[in-house]
Image (cartoon, rainbow, N blue to C red; front, side):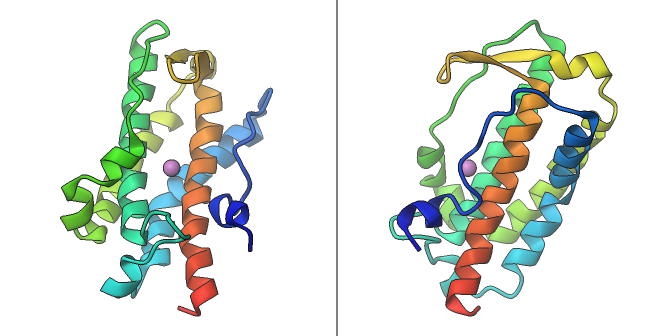
Length: 177
Ligand code: NI
């Protein structure tokens, strides 16, 4: 496998131009399933396996799982800001910096798995009660320098969920774990 294939096992994120109700449902289904996918893909991993990078120079399995929690906590805050303020400017964060902080190193991976269950329960409860017009609400992403609508946000985080799950699954497959 090339480094690019290891890095982007499901391909890079492609911004959709539009969406259907079925697309939305599919993205929300992914976000609903993600915590259980995390449980399944780290099941029975030992300490050595959890500390193995999913690719050369890449994050370890433990860092990937904690990163999903970091990223999706930020996403949840962005969603709530966009639902309650007019096109708020959100705060980007240094994801590699976060992944290098001591909580990522010293917190057992199952803590973030549990966190993701709780977080995604609140996230998907909120999503299930969105009014159709609320999907058009936006936030401004200063690093991307554009507005992101909430429907597109769902496409992005559904991709993000599958992207990182596949990192762990493909590492396990390659190693016969
Ligand atoms: Ni990520």
